[in-house]
Amino acid sequence: MDNALEHFKQELGSIRTGRATPALIETVEVEAYGARSPLKQLAAITAPEPRVLLVQPWDQNIIKDIEKAIVASRSGLSAAMMGEQIRVNISPLTEESRKELVRHLRQKIEAAKMSVRNLREQAWKEIQEGRRAGLIREDDKFRGKEELQKVIDEYNKKVQDLGEAKEKEIMTV
Image (cartoon, rainbow, N blue to C red; front, side):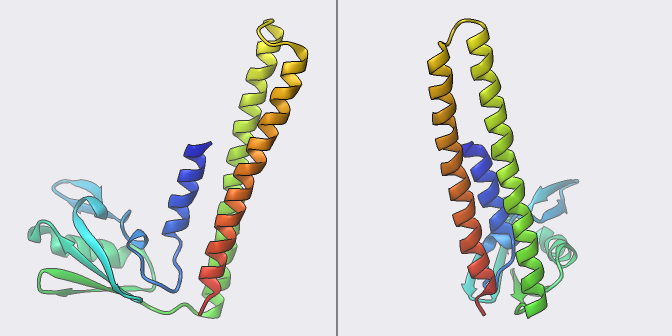
């Protein structure tokens, strides 16, 4: 379940808000050295200003490839080379785009909750199989079910809280 929560956190990081964060572009796939690699493996990414990201490639030979990949990856991002760096400007979000991002966020929240539910089903099946095999007593089976539900509720609350915080961040002008 920790893996599901970590995956959800990573997905939240990739959802754009009004502020520039390196997570917005660190997973952009760049064609370099004959293979596709995430940008975070090819360059340092910093956010010196609220609406600006600076990308400092470790190898200057691929700077044009990085710029091209950033421009192709998302709307609302413009990249410009400045010497040995790429400056990525993040345009402000419109009300309409904020609402669209919130809708997208809610889909991600629901997908994370579904993932947790699937994990619950797997764990419950294991408990039931343990009971059938005689490894678990009947009362332990139901105690396990109650404890499992407590853990599931805790993870669902974490997902919901993270989602609400992200929604608030998106809607902040």
